[in-house]
Every structure is written in C-alpha cells, then in structure tokens.
Image 1 (tube, rainbow, N blue to C red):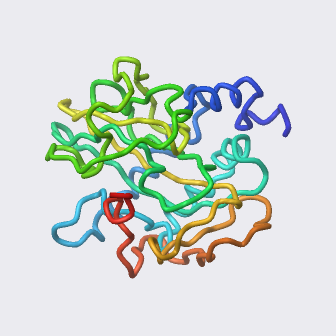
Image 2: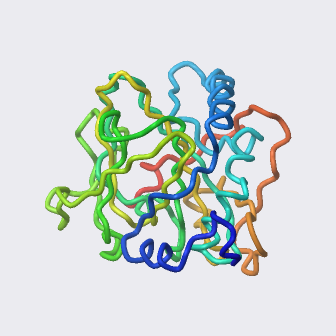
Amino acid sequence: MSSSNPNHLSAAQVKSYHENGYLLGLPPIFNAAEMAKINAELPHLLALLKPGETSKDIREWHEASTYLYEIAMNPRILDLVESILGPNFYFWASNFFIKEPRNPSTVGWHQDAYYWPMAPHNSVTVWLAFDDVDEVNGGMKLLPGSHRGGIIKHKRSTQTSSVLTLELEDGSDFNADHAVQFRLKAGEVSLHDDRAIHGSPANPSDRRRAGLTIRYSGTNVKNDMTVNPNFKVYVARGIDEFKHNPYGTPPTQRYGRPNFKPVSNEEAGKV
C-alpha cells in the first residue's frame, strides 16, 4: 500500500484497530461542499418511506439507489477498509441511524456480530457522519478491546426507548465507564469491529444526529442463507476467491428501495 495515500492506514493505525476494535481520527472522506450535496439529496430517499416507517427502515437500500451505492463504493472509504480486511472484500449492508433533535431513542449496548448469521468474524463497519456528532447529540460510545472477549449473550430489551429489542444481558462482564465517546465532524468516518460492544444515548439537543453505517466483510465470510435469504454481496476490491454468497446487481436509479423487506436484527438474533 502506498504511504502517499492518506486514506491507507499506517501500520500503527492498523495495530490500534486490532487491539482496540475501533479507529477514529481519520481524514475526512467528504469535504464540507461534498457533504452538503449528500445531505441535500437525503430528503429524496426519506420521501420513499411508507406510512409507519422511519429512517431506521432504510436498510439495504443501496441495492436500489445509486445515491447510497456510490457512497459505499467511494475509493476513499475502500482504501481504509482494505487496510483492515486486505485486498479481497465485499460490501453487503447499509443502514441509516438518524436521531432527530430532542429524540429520546437510545441504542442499547450490543455487538453487531450477534445479529449476523455470518462466519468467520472478519467484518468492518464504517460509520459515516452526516452531521457533527458528539456527546451532546447522542454520539456512539464503544468499549475498547471488547471485541476480544467473544460473543456475549443478548436478551430482549424491555427499554422501550431503545431502537434494538436485543441488547447485552444484565450482569454481562463489561464496564460502561470505560467506554470511549465518538466525536465526528460531518464527512468523517469511524471504523469498528463487528464484535466490539457499543451503543448510544438519546439526543436531547437541538441538533440532528445522522449517520450511515456501511458493512464490509472479507470474501472468506459466509452468510447463512436460511436465516437471511435476501443477502447479497458486491465485490468492492480484489476478487472473490471463495464465492460463498450470491452477488447483487448494482442499481441504476438515483433513489429507490429494494422490493423485499430485509431480515431484522431481531429475526436474525440468536434468541
């Protein structure tokens, strides 16, 4: 990897990611003008939501929207992911997490990998900030090193403010006081491991907190199609030497939604 490319991680950054399960402090993917254009297009996508749906229902819409597909396939993002996963990996999921001002919704402590019927664990989530994100407007928190402790049992949440109905069982061996607060400017990204324990509080502020999660996995990772039959992959870099999973067809329209309902975290979760 060329050291002249600012989006290729240094050896020290890669080491930190593997030790801590996350990475912050990366160069912006999009500058202010680019991010303003991306945000200006977002209402076109939100307009496709059906009655009763919210922005969290915008899952896997990259399969029908070049708007999202192009973000996920941006070379500046792929350079970062390649530094972690190596030369051969695919893109397979996207999901909006938007907390409007004074929104009481929280995201309970959880591990992404618990929900995913995929093995082995070799996935990276890129969290792209559409707004400035910090502790004031409900920014994410993560427990460093928690990805090394294996998958922890989750339970169904009775906390109605949580957008997840599965989260870590009470008494799980972790200390939330050790969590790192994520702070990002619009256009910046964070990276985290699929096993890292993370969550986020409500947004009591007057500022929106919007982010797009984009999921990538090494081509050695296989999805259980009996659990998630609509799973599709898009080779992002290199070659798919394993061919474990079905391929998706890149979208052709600017804004669209898939003609299926993605399997929910609750349906995929091992409970």
